[in-house]
Image (cartoon, rainbow, N blue to C red; front, side):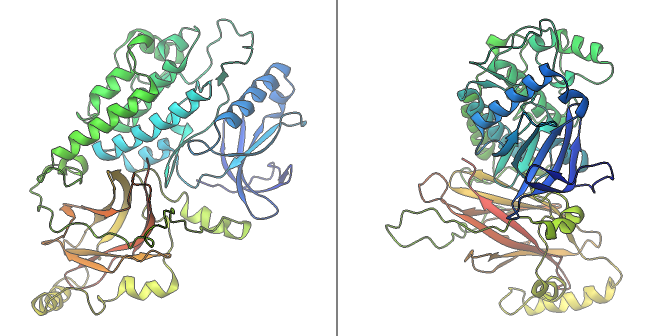
Length: 489
């Protein structure tokens, strides 16, 4: 979430104009800034008292070097830095998404399917970080940002580069107690398997909404990390064995991040096989909501039009950058989207879509005359009942498919179906489905899941955007949401 600048906050750091606050901690503050060309960046500046400490400056230099080594798909791209400035600073690409801690706080623990999607993304992230010879050292929910196309691991403030000479900090415990590994808590040397333990603790938090080793005084928490059992009550059984393996006290018993990716894929496949129709590729009902009879999938999913034969090109979409003039929208809407947790308010509908959002279905929507008559009667009976509304959305990948999942509230108990159409250069045709016959989708109480073929893993991957909505028995629609679908592997 972006906050307003305080009177004491700087307005300019290096070449970047600061326009909002992103966060603050014991080491420094993070601001939303823009370059002269309007490029959004996250600017981290160190507290002045720490900047005067030569040892801390050396530590900050290590952070910047580590961030540059692994910068790219799985972390926030380093844009600029000045470690020798009177107040050292680091600028990275702005990730427009909430932290995992914010997402769980605002929307509760993750269910099995999105939790496995998060695990896959974080395993990839750690694999890339470790392949660069870096140990992160402080993986925790607030250091995981949920972008539309996957999680970003940030803040390498206590990272260790394999070839760097370690600072003389013998016996000093550095990190976040609730998410440290036992060896880290004991002040011992740490390696890549320490990050895997922290990954297990992060997944446990995402699965239960609780810190796995509790809270309280740091000394008590560290004692539980070293000798106590984690609290994993409520974690989905499909993910529990993976979390337990990551949280092994002995580093040698933990899987490497690279091998974790295979375990997550196997768990996702098992989850898919539990569907009413094996191989359909949609998440089982219990992955998104408590058990209830599910309508079996109908005909195959709609596929977007592919490029001309032989083109062999990825489909790219130009996406606008955030500029200073857009900061008011950022402050109102907050972070847009996340890995498996795309917020329903992440995109504002265009002016031309407001009538569509509030009005009746257009020509071509498949609502028959009897349904129309029922709609009129329902409108008369429940004129005061609020219409259904979409409360959240997320996406995840299974094979070539990317699924969008809609969470919706139905206070009037009259939601009747859903629809979607391609937008922003996506040529997906308009589709409208009553809940009684959801096509390739699956409908549960308060949840809709629908697959679209994005060619994932085929060498001709696509990105698409769809505008989706819920309609009620009276034919009125919820405010639509725009969802971006992209392959994550």
